[in-house]
Amino acid sequence: MVVEGNTQFGTVRSSSLDTKLESLLLQKKSAILEKWLDLILEVYPSETQRFLKKQKDRFANPVGYTILQGMEALYHALIHGIDYDKVSPFLDRIVRIRAVQDFSPSQAIAFIFILKKVIREELGTEIRENQLFDELLILETQIDKLALLSFEIYMKCREKIYEIRVNEVKNSVYMLLKRANLICEIPEQEPDVKDHNIHSLT
Image (cartoon, helix red, strand yellow):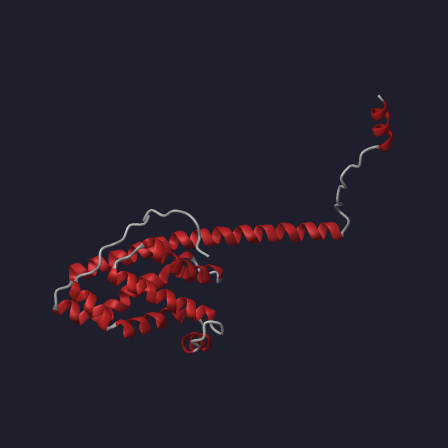
C-alpha cells in the first residue's frame, strides 16, 4: 500500500538521459544492480544477506523480492525518465521494510545515495573518456530527488508506526488496570421503569 500524501514533486516526469550515458547504463545494468544490491544488504548479517540474494521466490523471500523489484523499477526510471507517481509505490515498499526495522532516517534512505557510488565506480572510465560529466550531474540530481521522496515516505511510515505503538501501550495499560480492578466499565444507564410509567400517565 502506498503512503498517501502529496509531495513537492507532483506528477512531473523528468527528461530521459543523453543517449550515450543511457547506452552505458543499459550495458552495465546487471553489474550495477548486482553491486547496488550487495551494498544495500551489507547492513544485514552475512547469513541473511545470502538468503536475500539467492532465494528468488517472492513468497519464500518477500523482502528480497520487493527490494530487487524496486531497484529495477527505479533504475529503469532513472534512465528513461522519472514519473514520480509511478516510482512512488516502489520506493514506498522498500522504505516500509527499512522503517519497520528501526533504521535511522539516514540509514533508511541510504540505499538511494549508494547508487551514485556504484555508477561512478562502474562507469567512471567511460564517463571520463566520453566527457559525460554534465549528463552524470543530471543523473545524480534525479537520484537526489528520489532520496528526498524516500525521506518523505519514511517519515510518514514512522509516524504511523509511532501511532500504532502508542495505541498498543494505551490498550495494554487499560487491560492491566482492568485486571487489577482499578477501573471498571460504566454500564449504559437503563431507563427507570417507574419514571417511564409516571410520564406515560401524564
